[in-house]
Image 1 (cartoon, helix red, strand yellow):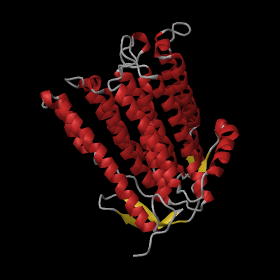
Image 2 (cartoon, rainbow, N blue to C red):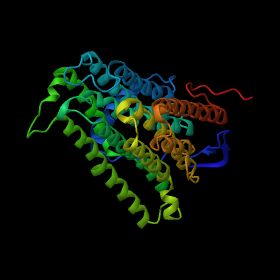
Image 3 (tube, rainbow, N blue to C red):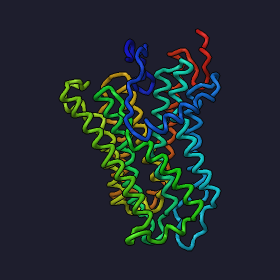
Image 4 (cartoon, rainbow, N blue to C red):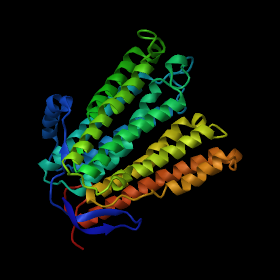
Length: 392
């Protein structure tokens, strides 16, 4: 358990209590993970040199996901390349995406095992792992949307559909950490392993058959797009959400919940809910149609902001401290959305949106760097090395 003196950074966030005495409490009951993937990860982790820091594995996996996303941005910025009559994304990009996705999945699965091998588990590693996961949770769907695009007729995806699905995926990720915030146990969602394997297979299938194949209905006039959306939403609403609700109610019945009231227990969900509400208002009433004009950038901004909100919840549940009521990014967002939908921004709405996106991205990166530096200094360890820092 994390306990002791609380360290507060210059941003006002609570990071750490001084001792990390107990192993992270996590439960994985997914049959695919237990009976298949864990055996594979146990073999792979044995070939990782003992001098490599676990955080380096985590970061390399994140960079692979980010590289895949940037590659798709280059070939398909407006989600139009897969549309009928457009120049399609080269097949080698889909192969790269499949390999990158699976390797990142593997690295994310073995970093904790490698930390235990090297006896280097720490709050820094836990926060680094979950913090980057909160960012990649949005990059996964907004990358895979390029397979179908916006201009593919019945087989394509509307920008509003992309936005809705991304919100659902992000809330599914948040629910796992909200669950730990209340129960003290991280119940790993079943949807994770299933979705990771499915995405890798879908990328390979796209490289083999081409995106034009998805423009044709498969069975009963259903397109691959419909199957994908049903799968993504189904994994969230029919697997992850019921699992979370079951675990919360079980904790309530057993009187093991960590929070004293319903208000305190629901507090972590307030900021992400308000975030999606504000962005939904902007999407619905934007005079310039900001989502349709900048679908990729809007979804990126959603993911970055949601990740920053989630990181602060993760820190709260790691330190067993009270979650903040309102995230600071919500205040400028309220002003921005109000000015945009009222027409005050006029022709500069898109430029203002781009500036806000750059601001949130820079703020999120800055926040992560500050957290990493302070935890590294406090724990007397390096982020990407197993060597101990020299006492100052």
